[in-house]
Amino acid sequence: MRSRARVGDDMHASGSEEEGGGDFSDEGVEELYRSVYDSGEGAGEDGDDDGPPVIDADESAAIHSFFSEDATRPPLGRLVWMRSTAFRIGSEFLNEDNDRAANVSLFRSINVVVHSLELTCMKPKPFVLELDEGIEPSEETSFEEAVQSMWNLDANRLTPGVDYRMNVQEGKKPYYKEDVSDDPLFTFVNRTVYKSRPTFRAFVALLDNYSAEVGEDEVVTRQEKGEIMAFLKAVMQTAPMQYCHKYCHLKDPDNVPEDPEKFIYLLRKIWFNLYSRSRGEAVDSCGFEHVFVGEIKNGSVSGFHNWIMFYLEEQRGNVDYRGYIKPKGRSCHDVTNNDDHVLTLQFHWNGREKFVGTSFVGVSPEFELAIYTAAFFVGEGEENVFMLDAGPDVFELKLKCYKYDRDTKIGTSFVEALSHYENEE
Image 1 (cartoon, one colour):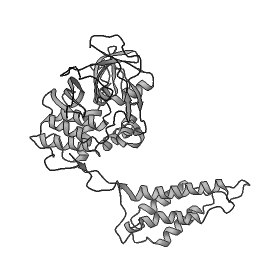
Image 2 (cartoon, helix red, strand yellow):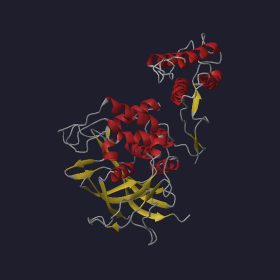
Image 3 (cartoon, one colour):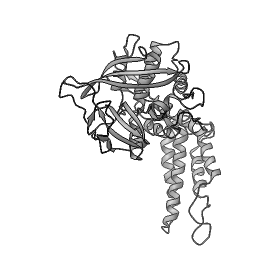
Image 4 (cartoon, helix red, strand yellow):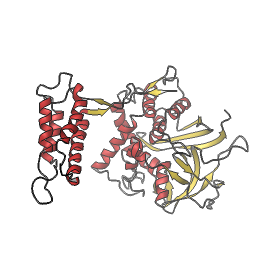
């Protein structure tokens, strides 16, 4: 299976047509740059006004206005020239006495100009999922086939042994509560992925937005609302979520809109709109919090099915991994390994017990959101049993998805591992 963006580059120009704005001119650009670099706002060490240039708020606004207004917006063919000219004109203002502070400040000013140019005139190209013939979802596509396709499309999935390492240690029976694993589950995770991969970065930003205790009102701030939309927009630029959208719309066009923007707002409703999990005592929960972050209800851990949250809380000392529970296998050779992408485990979170829970490991946030969303809209009932070929291992999984608040929101969604065997191919 292959997916690809409809266009090859990650960014594209959003300037005016080739003839440019009516008042755009090369001379005007050079004059603007010189006025910025020659602002003279800085002060030298002796107190005179020959210090390093500083771009103030008014000048920054003038740059943005020049690049964005219709009359002076750069034509597409001049964007490269605009960028190189920012450096060329800036070099004219290098301090002849090799004043390091002045020159560093000048380079910062050049960077502000170039950043403003790119921010105003360049924007990310929207990703458009394209699939090879025969892979496109249809009304006949089964839930199992859809999940496998979303797995195959998960380009952001981490590689065990490279991007992260686990130490699963000892296994146990589900009813055995003693700690059989002295060490943490994760021995290494490449945390740069949280910064370099937009969906990971946006996902992690959401994890500290909730109070774990059921019965305490959740308060969603303006910043947190922005983080929610940033996450949903990021995941919708990925192949698993675009496949999920296509699949759900084909299966249920009356309830799942074809417009991606409308689908984003539907995702926000089913995953992030708050409801009460305490019989009306408080507006204390939402599907995202329960599934991905976890909650404390009646003294026990509820939800908490995400490996990233588990790792971060383990690093903070809030999670105590107590051993894995091995799914049934076809032979004595089917063992739980450090490279398994599905793991059933026991743990304590802030001293509260999670008796048994199954999580995907190493997968991207968009993959989990995609398969749970598909189960909510078009799953074959509240429990969907299917086989997942996860590379070296094949898992028989039961995906449970229970609706809440008159079936308008996700109450919980997670997988159970029914069996597991090594792929013989």
